[in-house]
Image 1 (cartoon, rainbow, N blue to C red):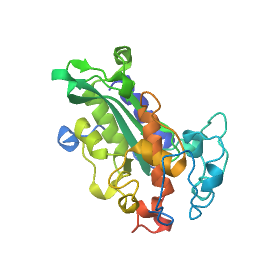
Image 2: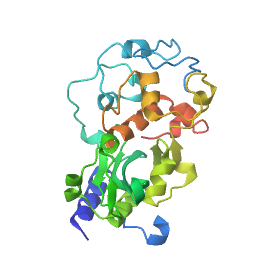
Image 3: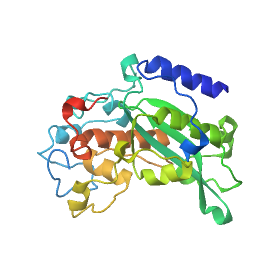
Length: 266
């Protein structure tokens, strides 16, 4: 068992003692919330009286990771601190996990996407897993402007198969959240039960909105509904996973319309 696996299993046991130790899976197994927002905009502010505290929230300095530390009943109501400190209780893996990946290009003109980084955060945005991953094929386009990945980062990278197994182990029995998840799971060559998967790109309120429509990008949604800026310059898979989790928590009742609130556990 590699050092990475030992560290992961230790974290799984310490942070979430209720969950049994997970072994690497076999290769075969690897195979609108409050009311409609009719006119979200891409400006710094959006005033929607149907979302309590939203206007006040958007007029104060904010950090996405700090907002996630708040409890649901006060999600938008507390000023963001200068530093983020996770208590032990907010480091637990829990039930809901958000995943995001960064890709590099291989093949002719870098048109094929391959995994170079994968990040998973918990309900409060704490990174429970963050790995650089060695692409399976020769990289012809690092896509650094968007991915933030450079060749030097590969010095810390793990093998694709190891990252794949570790991700599968962490996600086992959990609710998986992400934005455009199909792209991530396809490149990682993993699957997750549909009933335990929530794609934050798909929500009826987005389809009903004349400004957003369809399946909008993560950056636009976070800016429109929360007034937060992400993906400034290169992307960070940790930050994007946190953004997906924040959207899920903001509109949780809509993403999980048939789930009784009393049964929604963090």
